[in-house]
Length: 340
Length: 250
Image 1 (cartoon, chains in turn red, cyan):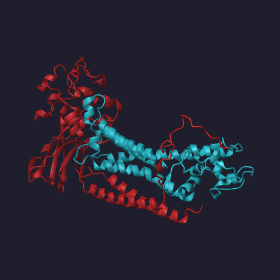
Image 2 (cartoon, each protein chain N blue to C red; image 1 turned 90 degrees about the vertical axis):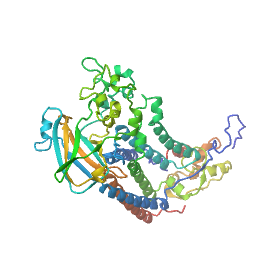
Image 3 (cartoon, rainbow over the protein chains, first blue to last red; image 1 turned 180 degrees about the vertical axis):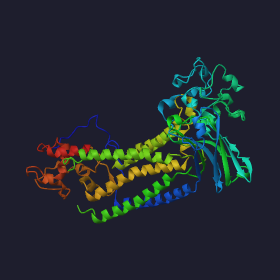
Image 4 (cartoon, each protein chain N blue to C red; image 1 turned 60 degrees about the horizontal axis):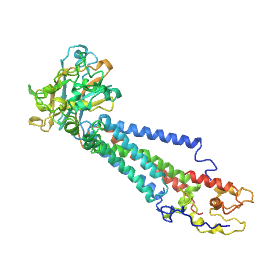
């Protein structure tokens, strides 16, 4: 028997929300949606994959290893000696024009910038120009915060200390004359790093801000003298320093060193001919089986050469089309009985 | 019903969830890894910094999770729409804010990783990677569900596919199936009925009920009766169990 309930104060309101009567939409995986959907996605992926693959193929890349780990390879003399600033050269020949804008990268292998203790070993306040941290660097930088005579290191930390210090110059030999290829080092770091994240202390001359501090142990020159040719490229906003401080995620990485200045003979890129790279080999990598290389590359709308994306899209697109055919067969054979 | 046959949380189901989880995790890591190996921005600068790679993985993960959630939500009311869209858009809003200049100026020590969002999200190859990862995780799920609906439809799937129309959500915690709201609210159960078989479904999936001894009222639709157990005293708890099952599982 139905018991009539009396109206009580706790009775919920009779609205759609409280009585769970909200209008609802019900998505259903019906054949009319899934199968054409898969076909469309498959075809779209194949299209994108073709575009990516073709673009990637049109990008020119030249990689030159100069670790010098085996006798006879370039720079092997430098890799075995302990002389700093050892000079060696690499020769290469371009048979066709290397289309500009051409970017000059240095690459390192087996180098784990993503290691946690390494990555935490820096003082962001110092790098932001806060002078109070110059005299007392944060403890996360240890053991690279104070040197043996208890003087503070600026910039402190392991990342700064391990800054890449090989330098390169590029020359082009044609018709017996050797021309120096101009390299442009402006604007190679992220805009946000240069303009916002890193600041020099607002002391002029910059050298005075570093009184009472020492340079990192492995550096040849202190931070305020990193670039003698361009006074604005010193201190913490030095472009090479910024590029190095942006920690790479993977153990084999490349970082932008310079771009080929598109002027004069090099407006369209690097012309065909013989080239020589003179390297000042400072950075030791053989101790941990690392490798160093130089990479020339041009870029497109999708970045550098990356065949993976193009191939992946093509493969997945074809799989989608195949799956849609399979689903069509399944649907046709085991047609769902719709009599109730 | 499926619950009585223990179809929703047995070892086989657990293993299939495990496989799905492993597969998605591997895809979410290795596809961005392979596409970011030696990648650069389209103006030549570096793209694969540690914070930006992490941000890319996070974004892929969030998008996959939201889409999986959407696939598993059978009834989209305004509340569902609001929360899922809020979550997706909120993720992007919060990440971009977290990685923005403004937050860095206010709290420099708490937001040192800034710049990652801005410098990666304006690159087409990053979005293409996200799109690829997301579809690689979701399409197998869609395909499997579609095929299993065709090959081995469960009683809930049949309910859905037979009522392909816009419907209002019924009450009483049948939160993931259409439930028997119409029947319940039509007050038919307040009338004493003679003992006869009336069934909503003629499918043989309800064989459990048909095998019961006849002193039960063998109406499949008696399931919701137990809600009104205050009204009828001669119900056994067997029909209640299946409804409890439907409440909790989908």
